[in-house]
Length: 144
Image (cartoon, rainbow, N blue to C red; front, side):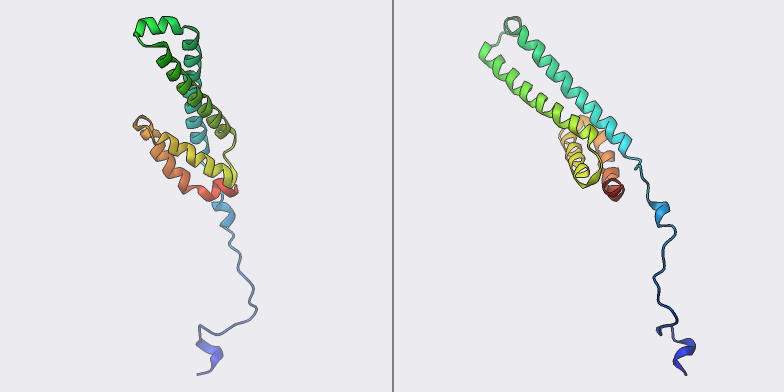
């Protein structure tokens, strides 16, 4: 038996790499999860912005609130400062996430935003599927 006849392991002819013509068809420049991620981030941004507006409004009427709720003014001040700082920080964080969602850094940043939403069981119906599809389309988001 000669080497050139039926040996599947022998080298034959020119050894040039074969290009996959369907490789470009699999790449999607706009992953389908991006619009849903923007809607989620926008809703969370509106939630924390509304909370911030509520804290600022409560700061103007703190005497009335103290009398109606029968709490100490120092306790109300501490509560308003805590919620004000927290909602202001989260408003800014989600505002950045609204515009930065591509590239390796944007993918990780928005993954953290999704995980922030997982801390509340009220947002689980939105964040769990979003997390699954966000991780599934990682390469399209990072390198798209």
